[in-house]
Image (cartoon, rainbow, N blue to C red):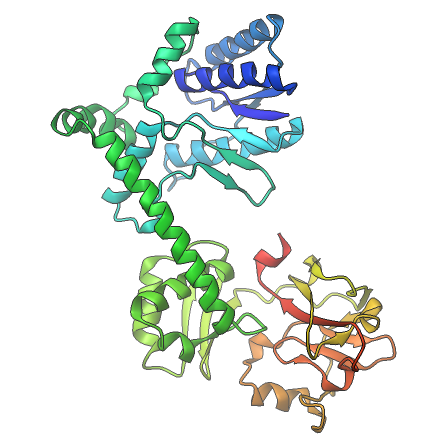
Length: 432
């Protein structure tokens, strides 16, 4: 099963028809997904048209089924109609696609749409992420692949297909409303731009493709830097960050903030952190959902509220490599094979996870001395807000692992034993 976002307009009508014809030869079914926004007096008529169109095509032998979702509510006081409609539409499309059993969702944006998006983002002063405009294919966190197969195709090719096939479509009257930024661009700017620069559409769409490559490169470099700079508890090595070039430090910091905050950080926050943090050893900055705190060379995110009391102790099996989400604890255990060091896989088959109560002893080195966790935390420069992760104990009560410090040396695997390395990941990304 594949799904197609179907508004009834010219572009989505052509895409749905093409997809249904191809699916017929491949033995697949297509779900046509229509979102009723409730914003136009014509919305009910558009819904009736789309339903009738799909029923007629299905009766003619195309493997189609029609799905519809009505958006509820209205935009918030500070939210634009465009943003509200877009967010609601994308959520509705994802929900309908999953309900239909589809893992692939096709959208009908074409080359002109891509070029317009690039121009609008540039006018807003966007960076590479904004200038990259719309991706041709994107896996989302819900496991659905969103694909725009026509981003490199001109609108004229779509119109030619509609005429050739004799397909009926609806015209959205809001497309001529100059209150919307994209409409102002189409109506007042684009005709003059195209007349002065006939290749403007292709050139701007190509510029978006270059921005996408630049964005991918930024992400790869940030991942590489954060592998070295991000501590076990999620803190950022601030001193290490400041040794990077200004551009690379900004790139790594933005990526780290995205992980911690769950959304892109404002450029003003990134600039303030880099400007002020270079001269400070202890500081705090407010941010979305809490505060960022710098302490002894490490930057941490402190949520606004500590949340409920720690969950009750629980037993689990961590003897299998992979990500083991613990939603009640706000994180996940990352388990990987270890070439050296590590804990015995057999020992991890039954372990207990519980909160710190005080008095625990931790041994950092195989030939070292066990010391109180408080002293170990202080020696490792872990601030109080980074000491809240769950402790891991063996079935016989031995302490095995402490987030931020690692594995207790007394539990390390002996030569010949299967070894596994643990890492506690407290960030929201870990439990998606």
